[in-house]
Length: 162
Image 1 (tube, rainbow, N blue to C red):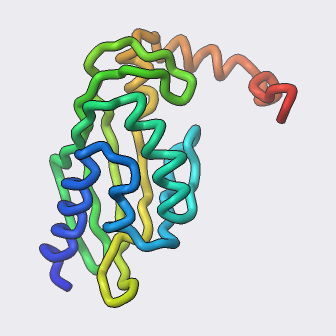
Image 2: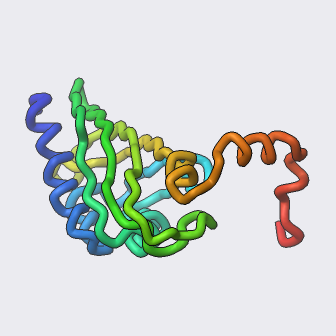
């Protein structure tokens, strides 16, 4: 497949993703896909786990989100993109209290494409999400947050159930 063909696979996924409906990704991802996200979200195995543990909470927190790559590149079986999602921070996300305001969630993705049942689909996604940027837009002084976190040993953050 050409680089343009591969970028079109990602573009079609975005078209579905921006409808903000859980379950829409099954058309674009292999059954055993791997979504490897940032700390705080982690790695998800399979499109069902991805939909339930990543997309459902994200859609609930940011119900009017629209993702838009500002750069998309392709080489071999890989496509990379970076951009942002403009949205309203409507419900708490990753323990960050929602503020009801418009935010811009920046991201960077690397997708690998492979064939499944004769159809080329997305099979792996390495993802960076600017969680600190969301904290800042929610009203936090990120420097103070990082100073606080850095001033405590890791044991401080381990709860009694862990």
